[in-house]
Length: 483
Ligand code: GLN
Image (cartoon, rainbow, N blue to C red; front, side, top):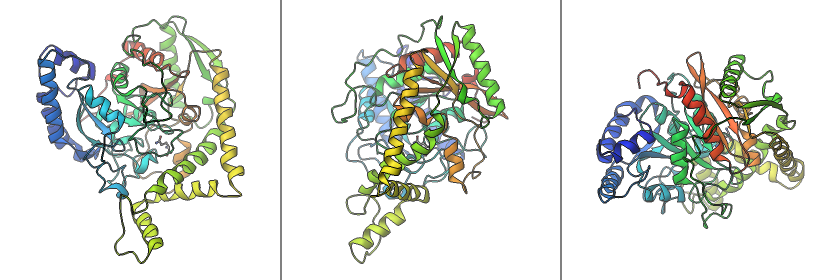
């Protein structure tokens, strides 16, 4: 039962082959049995899951239908869930029970999805390895000595290990696409503003975007359908109609223009990954796509710009965690300043403290123009590069990451080495564009992802290309041994 995709589950439920309650019980038992090896969950919500499953079964019995009605999922632990711990992977929020549901959580619940639990993540979504979580590192089911990617590593490891078919995640600089690549999943970062950020604890507000992690593009379409849409509670949410993402999956790729940036194939890219990307290009050519070399000349400036903008926004967003209103409070403070200092010093881990300091520095008087404003100018150049490229091509293709998943601890002493791994993903966040990662093969038994980028609001095009690719390849069907 645990091998089924969301689409298969939807068909099985519609055909009354099993009930949501039966499926939920099977998956909860599987999580209890197997997750101790992975550490992909921070909280299991068994009682809520069984209650939602029974309610979904009752709705189906009353004639309702829908691909998410009775479908088991989990939420990255930065989506607020009413009355349930919402920790953001931090000691700071270990005692925080959200007073309301995030819009994404509420929408999926209304569609009948069943929440099995809250998944582990890098602390406040800062990281690319899921090692900065206060709840401990998550392990990659493909090799337990390797990282699953981050910051949505818990959602990725759980779905890859078939503990559940799909999960929500967020992507500020790659945190959906990079763990998807490292664990052989399909993950989609939507256009900025497509999915509401209300109740999604902020890391860098101008970059953060929620999206689906699943095994197939078909399943990402189903989950995105439940997540996307205008929300008046989020002032950056876009009031555009949500297309039927499943409807265009079957479109032909004949004549599709795929741009391959020449800057992507530089010295930093593992040659074995470069070869797998070339293979995926050949596969798409067979399906009728036309390949064109393009250039993204400002790509080299993207990492430095991102690592100024993201920490700057984080330092501002995280100032609310002061030990007064919510979250961790130190014991017996001497005075107010002592309360702030020790509550924050004890509540935040080292990576979060590093980002707050970098961000506060970049925003301080005298440095603002030199760092923050400069980074914003680079951001515009990166966006302009994409706008020029999309005049010539329909999608852009390349690797999701320069290397496969590294060993746990391998980059702990050198944060910049981890930042450099984001080279292919962060440009989409700087420009606000949608991006998708899909399985493209293996290197030393570890999965490799190919990334597709598209113009604003062309999530359907990305899902269509990925679905056609997945109809003709079987990388995405491979299962990690032991799961
Ligand atoms: N690795 C990037 C960072 O640490 C991206 C994280 C994310 O997308 N949340 O900021």
